[in-house]
Length: 229
Image 1 (spheres, rainbow, N blue to C red):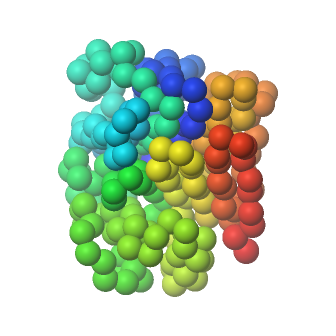
Image 2: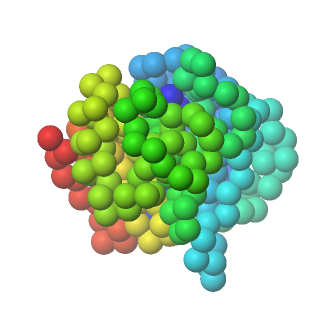
């Protein structure tokens, strides 16, 4: 389980996106408002972002709580990006607490975060998973199948594990992809860009809830939502 967000639009500092909003990921690490499973997200965090001239994203992760990393707090106000994925982690019972288990996971130009849980036994064998945790194995499967097959992959895994929660967020620097499958996701569309988040980071009335079992795509042209079932 976790709380995560993604942004596509005009460059914003990581502090603006992750630390400063009234209900930021920093706050959600210890006091989430809409989290259905778990109460805190103190088992690690990560942020991935794209910079001009670089095809692949940069990434910063830690196994510590987000509030316990003063180094990130000191540089977040001066790091800007127009495409960001960030997450705070609540570890599934029995899963290791390690930096490699924190989202976002990467493959080439892609960043990917998973909010939820899945029985590892139903996942096909995959190569190059960053960790043995369920989220990392699921991310490796998605990368192996390709993001264009994201909807089919989620349906397949959801059918194999009816209790799975498969909320995914992915970005490649030019677009965002997301799924809702068993947990919450909200969207904020503004003139400056589009945010997707497990829960709104403020009380802006423009936030809207994405229906469960949906595929979301965000491009500079706007947001589209397609039913998954």
